[in-house]
Length: 238
Image 1 (cartoon, rainbow, N blue to C red):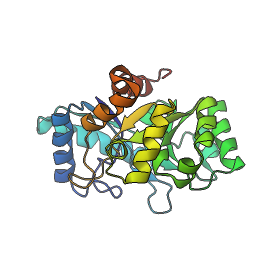
Image 2: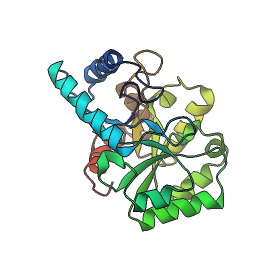
Image 3: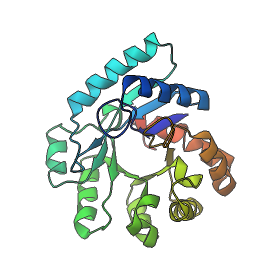
C-alpha cells in the first residue's frame, strides 16, 4: 500500500518528534503492508513554514537512515499545504513542493469557510496543470454540512483524500458519518493515514480499507491505497 499523506519526518511539524519515533512509525507501517510513504509536513498554516528544499533534504537523509535500519519503506517528498494568497505565484516560481516533486498533484487543506475566491484558486491551479487533492474533507465542518460543494470540486477535476482513522471511527462520529457518506457518493479517491505518532495517530491503513470495502467494494477500496496513489506519485492521471 501507498500512504499519500503522513507527518513522518521528524522535527518539522507536529508529527514525529524524533528520528527514533519516525523509525518506529515506519516499522508499524511496514507491518501493516505499507511500502511507500509520502512525507507531507504542514506548511503555510500560520505555524509551520516548511520549504521545498528542506523537505527534500530531510527525505533523502531519512531514506538513508531507513536503509541502515533495514526498514523496507520508501519515503517521498510532499507537503500538507494550506491555502494562502501567494500560492499561485509561488507555484509559477517553482517554490512549491508538489507530491513527489513532480508538479502534477498538490495536497491542500481547505479552511472551514469555502468562498468563491477558493474556487478561483483551484481553477488557477488546474490552469497551471496542478490537480488539487483535497485533504480530509470529512474533518472539515463546512464540507460535512455541504457535501454538494465537495461534489462540485470533484466535478471540476479535484481529487479527495480521506483519513483512515475517520473511516474506523477514531476521529469521532461526525467525521465517520461524513466519510461514509462521501464514500457512498463516490467522492473519495484516496485513503491515507495522516499519521502523526506511534500511538494516538499511527500509520495504519488496512483496517480502514476493510471498512471502506463494505461500502465501495473490495476492488475500489484497494485502489484507493494502491493504484490511485501510485499514479499520483508517478505523475499520471489518477
